Image 1: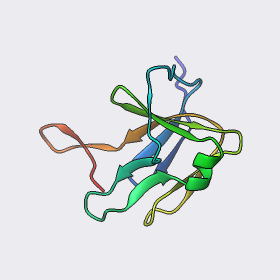
Image 2: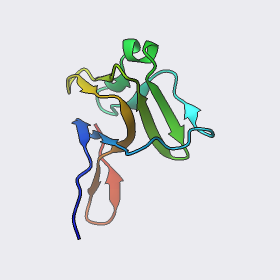
Image 3: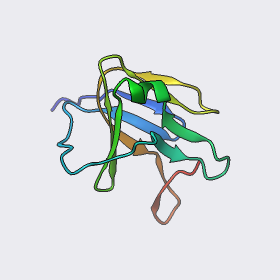
Length: 110
């Protein structure tokens, strides 16, 4: 059996995992602010840049999962401490890093 690696980009405790195809967004709820996550300690935000939202980037919630649809021009993700990343066109699952604390898995807090 061959193992395949899915392309991903990381910005601090947030991962953007490129998908082969976009999920069906019919029942998805758009996140018009572009805010992906807020830092619990510092208040800094992982967010889609305003210019990327104007260019057609779409951030949505589908159930408990977050997705990003990046347009042909790509999408810029910004954060005050972790720096900026540029995602190429495509569909992405937005994943919070998790850690095991000895008893259970939990989301890493920024």
